[in-house]
Image (cartoon, rainbow, N blue to C red; front, side, top):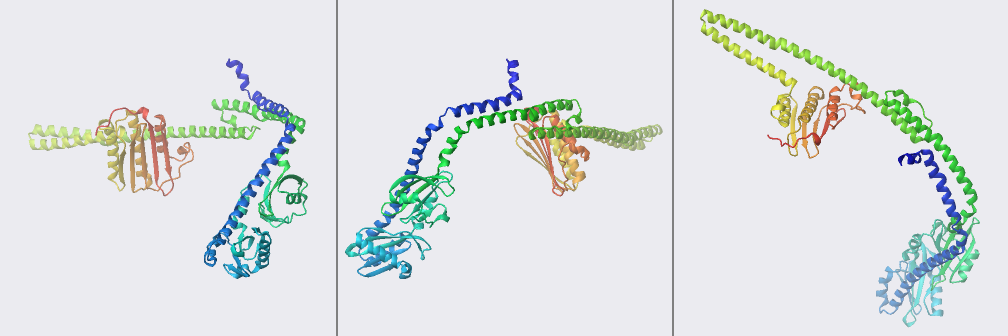
Length: 570
């Protein structure tokens, strides 16, 4: 079964399946949708939607105006208007005018009504003639510096109450600004003269649209829907609704193309789109084979050469898509890192070999200079003691035996010191934490202040893990002592259920950490490279963080699969 499915996984066939087949299915689906049959339904839907939107906002504006007229009616029934009327100024930001007989009470003061007196008298005359609430056209008010309307209502005993309120105070601009009409549509308010009172595009406020046939039709009716040509010879659909109690109209306009053309245009373009789709599919197929399939095959062959050690095979240029070129660049960098790592390991092994030979030479010198000399001195003292006994000089023989005892003890100490250098006896005899504690105590004899911190529940570890962790801590502390010029160093050991961690942090001079681990050997940091190799051999990891002048932090994490279940016994 897998043998039969294997060809389906080839890139050439995948390109065909993901280009020609989907495009063909899309074209067939579009051809059978019958978009033309829905054009009339679409027109009715747009008409109902936009007309309902215009009526909704016309009704909301009517409610706002009606609320203000009710406030005026309520004031007319109150006694002592001079004292109660000022409280209504909260609802009329332009002020209140109350006429009783021929006298006007102007609130908040007469200056606020100075530029409105002619319009105020006109509204008062209409109230006398009609005996009902009157709404003035919106006008630019010099006092409020915005569009304002006067609302007048008859009161008791031939009183007339007129309130001035700005359209901003009514919240009309913000209300209409929040309405979305398609992507390019708009909703606006016009007065009885065909002038724009409020528009979502503030630049069109005050524009005279009375010459437009669609505006004239809107002013002639209460609710309707029409079509006209826009300023750029673009067909527009317009719905309108009148605001009761006023001569205002809410108008909703929208480009017809935004509603229908995306759907109606497609069937007309099906033949051209089909030809274009085939051309695009063939072009995509050629592109896939030329810049994807063949470069991937070439890259696979070169990658196999790299696995056999030919790092130059990946260097050649491959003319392919950007992603494949990035993949080739990543493989180049990987090959370069492998080469650097191999070179670093060779340097590291050479350094280890030199270090071993140097250590052997040092031990040979110390055995020759200390241990051998001590044994020779022991032999001489024995010979001298034997002669003293032969002469019967017991006191001299006793003194020589005391010297023999001291020389023997010194030799034992030298041998133990050699043994500790070769193998940490504290680690074997006392355990992991005591061995680390002895390391830290050994540093306190110098000017460096050292501290050991333990977190979690201590326990005994597997021998290979304890030795690796001890050597990592030992090397890190030795580096701090030799190179960092630090005043304080902290060795933190953290035990968890999954791993054991070592953190060695000092406040020394620090250094620039190489970007790649393979560069540690080139920079001469063989100790860090050795610590990293020890951690990797146990399946762990080691991170070094340092900057010049900011100290150094060495952090090693060793996995729990090498941790034994035995508890640490102090």
